[in-house]
Length: 166
Image (cartoon, rainbow, N blue to C red; front, side, top):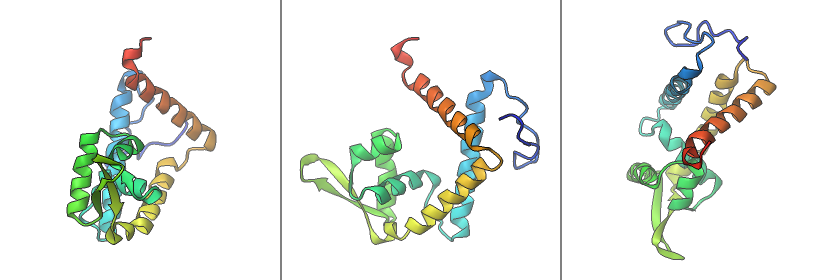
């Protein structure tokens, strides 16, 4: 995996990927996320979409898969806290991408529905996601992709289950 040519891995063209120390794993993951979000923001702007942020993509993607969706299911699906999801939904609703209704099965809960404006984002979301994945995995073979995903899942589980002991 370290055989990849990362000479121009940063926007500035500097080589920040020199066999990173184990202690820099969170910094590296943070930079990957930052660059991914910059890629998404640029791709949205190229399509003249200026009222969505990269964080909104997870909500829209989930609603493309299951519409409507209960708010608590949305939080589980996208791996975010309920209050974070509420903020994302508030923004998307104010901008016309979704609407919410009381859940008839649970009067306290809410169900989120895509609007026609939200549904109109499906093709752009699919295209942008495909572009991002091609860029992320460029030069990485299938075996290394699987190993990377397996290791990242273990790291996430370790941090999520930190109270479970060693």
